[in-house]
Length: 163
Image 1 (cartoon, rainbow, N blue to C red):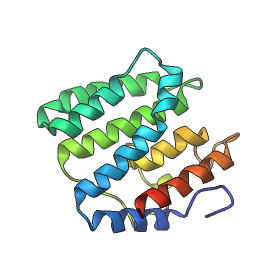
Image 2 (image 1 turned 90 degrees about the vertical axis):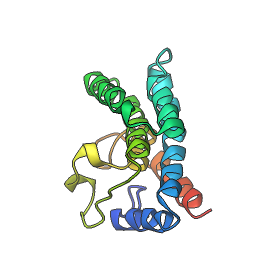
Image 3 (image 1 turned 90 degrees about the horizontal axis):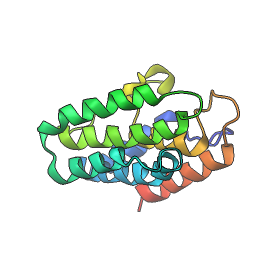
Image 4 (image 1 turned 120 degrees about the vertical axis):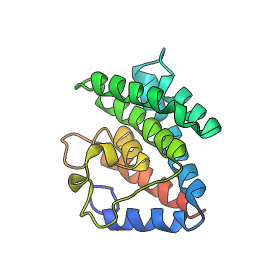
């Protein structure tokens, strides 16, 4: 683990590839666990809005392509909510959204050859990475993030992924 509390991108992609060897559903389960872990950050900021988790639950249950319209609407809602006071909460919402998209699509396309998320479009960040942003208060390149929280999250992730 690096000094900023985050394992190297290549290591995180290797862990995902190892989980995926057990099938897409195994990786979806890991993504779901990550989204659920970070969801309290959403709830703290938006206590009366359960849309991201409700949509995630529907997508995991139904895997219905007809949910695409609702997923797109949630994406717009999350984009509109971005702002200094809501960034970390919105990361948690995006973790739910991205997991739901993967469930509906029935496939996941990682970018293991990238040097890191800085090279990957944010819309393609993994739900597990988005959850780490919610827990740590932002990315490693952002000021005033919680290194201890980031480190704890990624240790949990490793333990969960290898269980």
